[in-house]
Length: 273
Image (tube, rainbow, N blue to C red; front, side, top):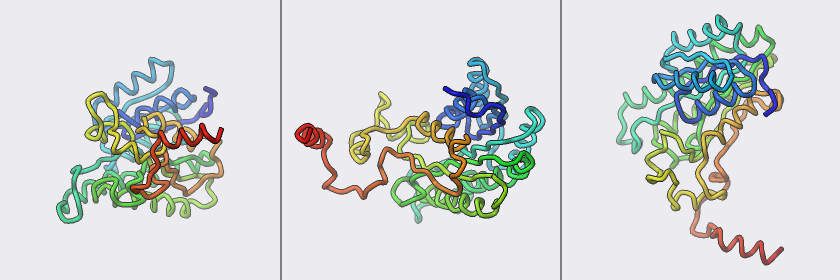
């Protein structure tokens, strides 16, 4: 891989596993010095993996929805590596897996919103001034297809991700002329600890889910990390205030009984070829 982030300093929250770990490792492989953060001790393993691979990283165990913690993360980037150029606000929680509007509590809503929406707000608030002093930067938020339409997650989670998409748009406008870009990634069905209950014992997504995805598979954390790297790099220098959907085509159409069967598609293509 070409070194796309040489000399850059990145912060990644929710880096103890899944998308956050994959993104942190990819950022480091692309030349960035990475501050990895998570509420769990597993984030130290992420940093160790980066260092073992020849990268530069420092781990912080903290709550990404806490204002002092996020402020401290930015200060850590300045103290250790001289500044912050990239902030991937990736940390998130689902709440109860089956929570609807009428069977969830106010306390659950407040906690999900605190981590999933207030956390990224704090990331923007505290990293943007530092990026401005360095002439610009990239802030990336992990949203979800659940923020685009109902049915892809619990109600509090879905609402928090919808709010996050709008936060990205608002922050883009609030940072006009700064060369600081703010974008969101909307993952679909990705194999992480958050979605483990949807997979079978061998780690394969069930057919009733994958049949709705044109690529016929669930995504991997690395699929999202690759898009995060693109948004962090100068290759995406004219993308701002957007939400990039990375779902294998899941949200490209309304699921229906008329969704084509993959075998019939292959037969048709062979006949046409």
